[in-house]
Image (cartoon, rainbow, N blue to C red):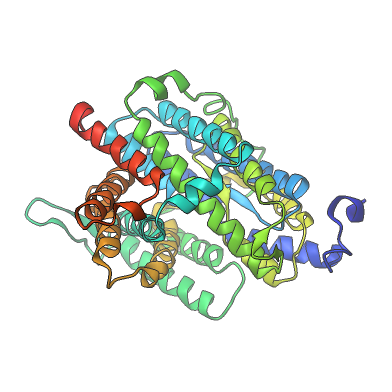
Length: 430
């Protein structure tokens, strides 16, 4: 049956290898079941229901990726987009979380249409690589700011806007220790380094942070508080179409880059292309729609899947194992609820640092490429909004190319996005 479903022999794999690869991938991305509920709870969402939604969305997305697209790629609610959802859209813009879920749903539907009609390549290829890189880096800086604030290492200041927090507090000290532990374990190639770091700080929190242990296992909490709570009409009528655009663009770039990167490492590219890329993108976009219905921010392919590929995973059986392991996590809700924010902050900061590594690929000698990229990356954390960062990046890019006589080099999609943002700022306002 496994051979028929996943074509193991054709891929040069076997059941045992795929099982090990699936467990390896799961260990590297399981931290999301602790981090995602913590972040979305800050937006006012019920933490226990979000925990269930996270597990089911990850299981559903991974299962679709495995059974439909037959790729060894795990899926779960994405880091960065969950922070944008909670801190920029809900808390920053004052949008109800139900409406924000509606925006995620709409972006997922757009992603489905783009995948079905084959428009992905036109959009991705039409947007300059420098801006794509800058969006990822800006997302990393945004995530880092949130992590440092959650850990108490950075705090607000009326004089300087931000300043260093009280580093004598146990939360800040434990967060610093957790970050160093995660980086050290990752360098030593320990599987599940992020998960180990979160677990270690959670254990310390019972001794030094006043945390309470309420057990490990229980029946899954109710999903009712978040299930089908999305407000689609509100998302269409609340003047947050720029939020939908941001979700859509980041989902598209993130999914395409992750899928291609993991497939390349697994040796699954033919002539530099993925044979079933459209199926993989449909699985990704379908998971976004399903996740918003369940009650979580955008679900996406995880780059941590490369760990499973390194362990020999080559088919969708690896992803199916990831799905089953996420489902089993539904029964550890008390443990997830006991994880404090300063235990997940080191994981956020570590992921943020990794998101900055592609900045070196930008053409820094060409200021019409590097300046818009820098503007994008800097304004995302400084405006506390991914939407504003992307908007100013596109506007700056289009303006500089026009003013320097290079307008013919700019693809139509860039003019369309830049014009849409200019119209929004001039006629609609911030």
